[in-house]
Image 1 (cartoon, rainbow over the protein chains, first blue to last red):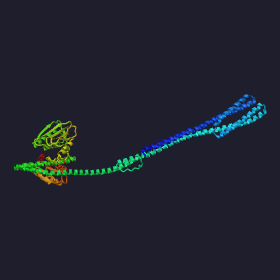
Image 2: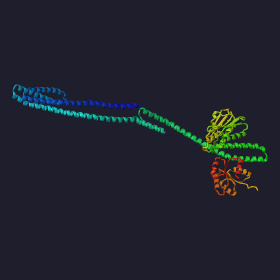
Image 3: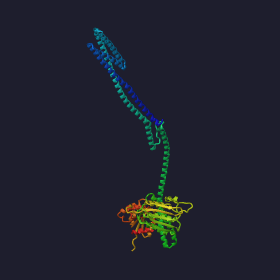
Length: 504
Length: 121
């Protein structure tokens, strides 16, 4: 059975029961009520006719007495008329009598009436024949008969009044019955509505509530909800589907959970590995610094010894050693910088800076070191920037050294400093081998190096650009590359201007 | 009359560093003494009476910064300038609270190093 049927069916039954009861009540009121009313009306009619008969009877008796005293014929005419009138009324009354007792009482009245009329006729005959003694004797008899007749009328009328009262009582009882049955019907309707509510609750509300609870439990991760819904309607099939879904979800969830746990373990491992690597680099670079310190001191001493002894021919070897020691020092410093940046421990001394002098100083240094490149410096800057002089200098140095490293001798290197809206932009452009687009973002990852089998390899650790970008980011600036393979490369970075209100 | 040689106490737990510092300082005309750990430092300060102390930050045993603070507390030693040495550049940020008079990062170039020391006298 579908839900629609389950809802419609009891509604139809409910309506039918209610309508049936209503029709029943109407019929009850219409028939029995009308019957009772008719009985009352009839009784009233009977009563009224009987009373008129009674009046006629009295008039007749009086007329007869008057005739006896006066002998006037008009009394006889009245008596005659009254008899006819009474007869007419009796024929009118007879079919109205509803019961046996009433009819018997009426027959008794008719008999006594006819008997008194006969006697009266005999009286009149005696009078007209002049037999007054007989008339007088008959008159006494007629009086008795007339009394009997009158008593019969009274009996009938009493009986009729009694049945009128009874009919009224029946009528009243009917009215009360109708009232009571109205109340009963209302109560029945209330009970039916309550039953209907309980039924709908069982068929719809409770299963829906259970399904909703199950859905809640599922959303909390409990994927084995038990259902008590056994119905064959849509809700029952929904419950079955939900159960199937719960099982699938459970499987899926378990799989996902183990997958997440696995990934977490992997992540933890890789983090631990990263941390170990950083620790190792920190310790290693620190430990490398001590021997480098010694090397530098001994180189210094050797230099002095060579000066003193005049063996200047060895000097060029010493210069080579000094270069290499310098390179090692820079590498160690770079590695330490990476470690410090990773740990967020790199100190920045933020002050108002003259970016022009920092950039031109670096260009001057490279003009001396790399005499084979042609350096061009374009500087248009009016304002100071906010930054750490050593770190900005380190970034400029890194970009120029890359330009020198990746462009052929004799080519130009253009360094520019320009005004922006809220920051200054420094650019370093070379005309060397360039960088393919697929490497543009990767070159800023630490230890990333562009390797190509057909290409000559360039020395380095792959940390310069990583450090530069991190340093510029710490200055709330940006560092990016614009390049195509074989067409040279241009690196740019921005540094926000210094404001007097700025927090340094 | 030839001026009296300035006396420098060098403190480091690395014998190689002690050796090279001694070489360059001696050749620059200073009188030097060395110590490898905290307890030695306090003894040497009393016996050698240095004009300057070069103190490594990370020593095995007592930390160089703690030694520095103790020296700056002692009435007989607080007037002696202390320059701290370290291979960790961030150590330079912490030395102020230990009352050190300066900081030199390792590795250093010899000439600027000697200039820095000469400037103290």
